[in-house]
Length: 145
Image: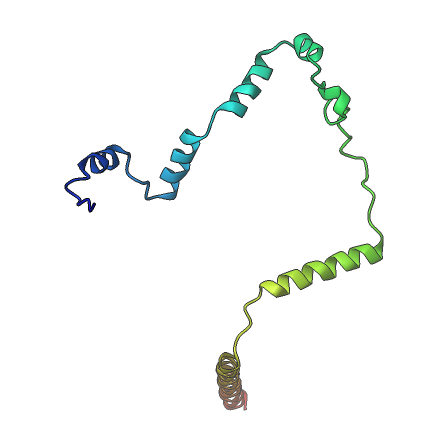
């Protein structure tokens, strides 16, 4: 049996009643956030609402037991251990290598073009400086004899 669009009117009505698909990234994030189950978030809020004694009785780990919180903040003037010079050199080389991988290297044609532009500019500047030097030299000799 073939069902035309007119026969499937019930399905069309259901699709038109759904919210339209979000176009922008912000709208998609908002839709995803509202569609997420609230299971983990409510569990965290419930833990915050419980008193510390009840949480400890339930077997929850206290922050002091983990070692992350509850310890003294280190002094600012305390010197941190520096890695050895060889380790620092190796880290520097790794970072340089990583940066060089990000570089977009010019093609041969671009290199020839850039080199030609630079050489023409340098030749122009040399000629300009030479002409100004020549003009000032002639002017000084004419003025002071």
